Length: 446
Image 1 (cartoon, helix red, strand yellow):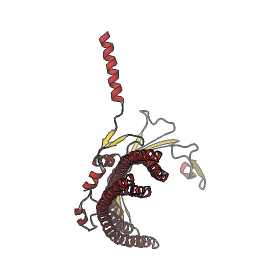
Image 2: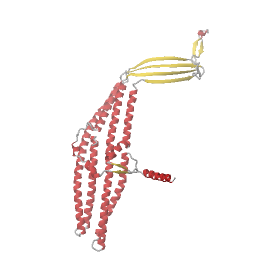
Image 3: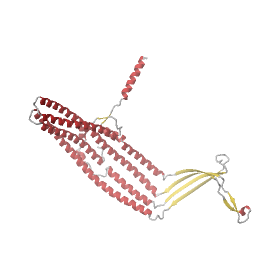
Image 4: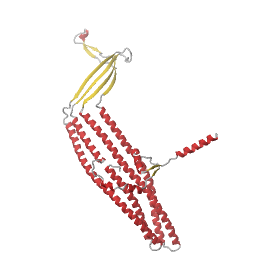
């Protein structure tokens, strides 16, 4: 019994340990892969493809055999009367006899099989369904590219706040140590009060920045969660490093990428738009073509004065019919002509839009490459500036405590260093973001 109790207690402790949520860990690539499946826009894009596939079959099915059945029941509350000449029943000529021809109740069951033999609109509809599916598939690619870029930006922003906090906390600790040393020197009468005040101003500004970055960090994580499709308040851990990522995303080969726009997703979407307008012209033209269909049906009719249709005594009378229907449009008061002309106008607009998209994409690619190249150059510049700012701040700190430099000079050097640190972090993030922007425009995932 004692062993059983101990076993149950250990099991409870084990379950309690496992029940504690362990934060999920994500590298940047893992975050992208997760978002492409769980991001809500990406999930809806998949649903759009599924809906397009159903739409394609729905259109196809309209040209396949259709089978329908009907059951009609009629009960004359007041039966209709027909008038017959009286002489038929031996009456006087010129007189009429009221006669009820149909029984009070009747029921009919009919099944009809129909088949569309020719319809120009149906042919165009099949082509349109195929294009609609292509549009949905291209829209999914576009969505995935946008999601990928959004995840990279959000992931980078989180890393930026994490790195900023490390630097700001380090700077705060150094400043607090320097301030403590200066205050002691001032209390001994070996330092001016202004030096203490200058140091306090710098520390106050730094603490304000630190508190702001802490708040931004919380928001950055929440933004990343939303982008990835994770619950808003879920705790996650990022395993990549901002500096390593910036090096991975530095690729001079990307600047030599092919500038042709024909394979970009935006150009393909514009081509889909043009193709859909061409089909609308064909659809308007097809409205003037004849349609041919055929049908065959069969059924049974039952009659009676009472509702006895489901009894063995009920007589049923069969019937069957075959037919072909040819519909030939002849004159529509130029309505079809106007519809065709309007569709052609929309087609001309789509042609202009395709040219516009092509030129805009060429400009966007050139701009993205320029921005990416500048980001790489700016990173190298900011790295050099940070090295210089660190040396300048170190020299001024040494001079200040040796009584050679003023507190104003030290504060200026510290402010310059803090600015250089943030610019360096931002330069690393810019490389990542600008590369992601270039990849999205070129529709690449490298």
